[in-house]
Image (cartoon, rainbow, N blue to C red; front, side, top):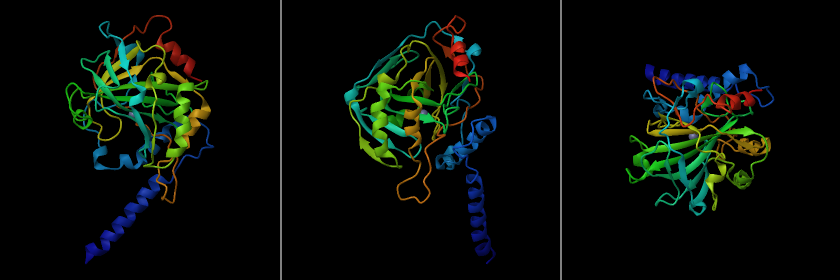
Length: 313
Ligand SMILES: [Zn+2]
């Protein structure tokens, strides 16, 4: 008898609590200041992907991280990255309710990545972005605590050791992800084809055909300079299978191009309350004794520090 009363009450209370967590939304007119910056962590956690039991981070090698430039260790043995992407292997774009994924045919070695810290050949399966509601934040990794408005992730899996992405996802040395910071500047001509396709996948679960896109056009001119470390996926299942390669050089996109990213929705067409797809990043995780290696020496002129200074406002 008692439980029949308490149960509905408890679930009502739970709903109320969830509502209470969800309600303090940042309005777009709010200026980007420090207070707003701390609120973004609350926002990123209320997305449904962070509410399941799988969202509990497991290990000591989680991503993203803050890259402390002066603590990164130069490794002269880090070779240049070698990308060999076939634009014809591009297949579709999908709004998965958290970001949009540009997906590639990875049934054979059509689009691959090797070199750098990698021992094997990895196949590109998709790329996606993370971004903020305004230009003051949005990247997952940070460099000396500085944030960028967005970050590109090119996701590859180890096709020499594993037979499919799903296996590589949970295994050691299974994934290799390239991270590229986006900065606001001039319009990115290569990105525009993608931007033009986005209105067709505004709602969650929408998919459209998208072909002949060369992901190499989204890499910075210099891909020989990067930081690398062992980490995890930044979305559930958060498996620690990832060799991260975060590019030192950023790419530039226009404010208008990023505004189209922000016009996408977390929500499906039939949902009553539509939610803008913004702040779809995870906060930085503790390094816990890991070493970040760099393929370049940070102390020469034109160092990453200069670039970071230039980025700050
Ligand atoms: Zn990502």
